[in-house]
Image 1 (cartoon, rainbow, N blue to C red):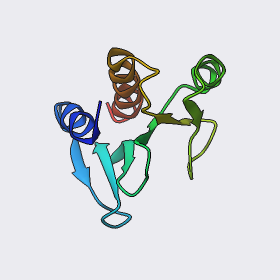
Image 2: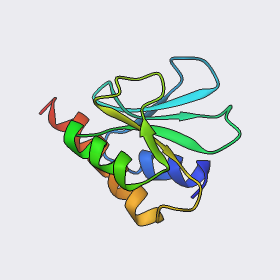
Image 3: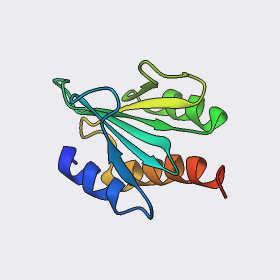
Length: 108
């Protein structure tokens, strides 16, 4: 996975939008005006933040060394995913789906 595949996948979600509320170095993907993925462009290593069920967030951090508490986010609800090749793309897409679904269902 790279920045473009993550971007394309996020924008393929219904009603997803790409915003730059923190300046040109962080893309924030939103649905219903709520963030579901933050993608910094100024990091050496590809990484992004996704929202996560609190219990699952802890479980994933224990299971994967490249899943960290959300950088600059509420660490109970957000994980930072380091895209270093240790996590299959399919799994990463599932985590993006989970984040999108958590945010999207709150507005239904």
